[in-house]
Amino acid sequence: MIVTEKGKYKLLKDFKVRNSIAIGTLEEGDVLEITQIDELTNKVIGPELMDWANNELPVEKIE
Image 1 (tube, rainbow, N blue to C red):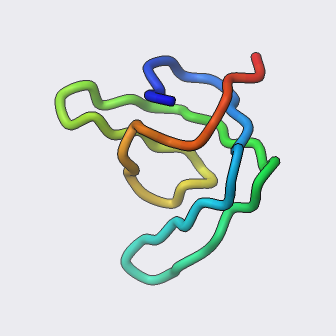
Image 2: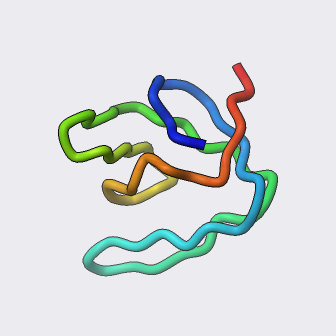
Image 3: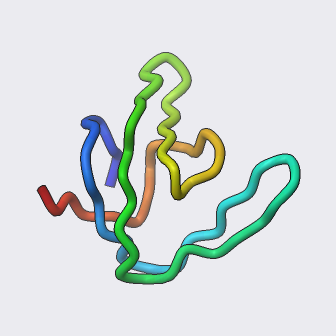
């Protein structure tokens, strides 16, 4: 799903996240909160993502 709105989303499959000092895995069923959207670069960010990620994520909106 291409995320175009801020809000809470449920992961439909495992998703790897990383930043400059850490790598992690978010598991299927985890809830992501998308707090910012950059439409120019097609990126989103939220606390669970640790860094900007492509806006095409394996999620469904839950709010």
